[in-house]
Image 1 (cartoon, rainbow, N blue to C red):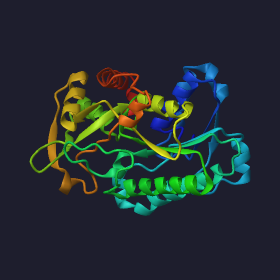
Image 2 (cartoon, one colour):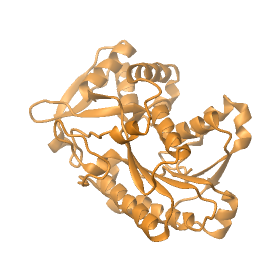
Image 3 (cartoon, rainbow, N blue to C red):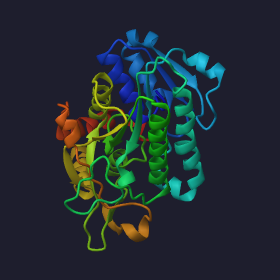
Image 4 (cartoon, rainbow, N blue to C red):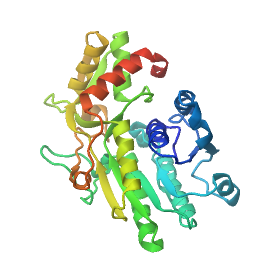
Length: 324
């Protein structure tokens, strides 16, 4: 698993350790998004899992050489979650995102095609590759991409390299598109922990909105639901060289989300609506995916949105070291 010390990655590690008897090799470079403290907390609370997890330090901008491959050992599945994902940073430095997300993915694919034991390569991608979704539109997996920033463009490029390797080398591969993921131990810059922190301090929350004052909207999904969907795809004999949307059950505008968080925190919300065009170029008001394909395979969300959101907020309040 690449990016195993990241926010989504460590939740996926925890889910796989809980639901299977598999061993996991986490590959990470431990940058601003990844921290071993996440995995440490998970493993300290489940001491018997420690022997099933190992760690390999590697930056995927470099090829996986024979020494690194020997450290990894036998591989049955590759879960590729490592990525640069901060939109604002991609706008400031687009080439670093091409290197991380396109070159990095290609290096991993090149390693993967050397593995005789490989059953499946899962490339974890994003709803942002489709660009903004007009009202009433939900994008299906093979709809046209329309990236609006270098981050989403680099993820779309990574997907194309995945498909190229699947077609050229018959690599067993699927691509997932996920939406706004939340949960415990999320990076404090992300919207939900940021709102928790600012509700506590009284600092203003800036909500990006249309010029008419309509806040941006997202489908939020808890990391455990995302993890369950990935494991579902790994364990099922579903069609390969395919894409799957992992979709949250409820669309929420960002002002409603901030107000709900402030309510759980028990503080008034101090906020301001900002025109997203002028304040955040490269950002979109609405993303939306169609989850019909996963539903047709029999998958459903294990935990519901409202309960998981409130539990995440309360957990964050009780474990406020993750806020800064």
